[in-house]
Image 1 (cartoon, rainbow, N blue to C red):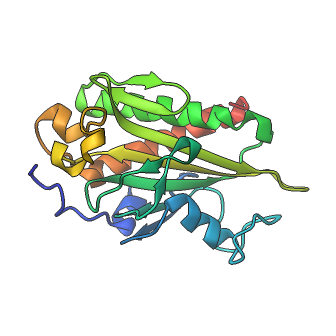
Image 2: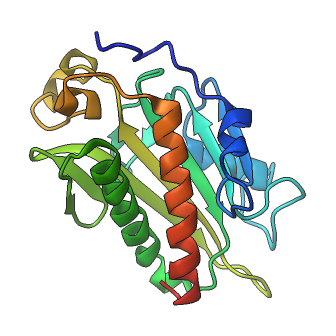
Length: 218
């Protein structure tokens, strides 16, 4: 067991306190458990579970929703994302980018490039990107991104960018069939990760780089 791997619950108020004037992170929700953070944001956007012309009050662009545990986390092509409680960062971001739906892939590229840079800066690890949406360390998957975007009439399109990062798992936390293909930051470092501090660094850099990418239409 790595130090602090479970006993560091995320705190929404503390996260927000570090994100002054940010777009991404102006609103933060931390759930103890949900099926999927992408689906949870979708449910906030409309109780009927369908995209509408604009989000209701309280779900503006930049809303970030974390879950300590996902019971049905999703990856690309319907793959299941293993999300054990308290061991990683599982979160989704609600965005309204001024891009076409056909350009939604650039949001995934923006996210995986920014996450890779933050891992490099915070931990002196050297991640690699495996397109279309994976980040790897030592040849094994440490993070992934799932972008879902829908067209809106007379308004910027809606996008949900879901992010999963393995932070404090040990090898035994992964299913047997994934133990040779998945890794956590703690496994690569040989010590636990402060998830709250890491989350702040991620959100700060995602906000900064999103502003740049948005200005240049990705």
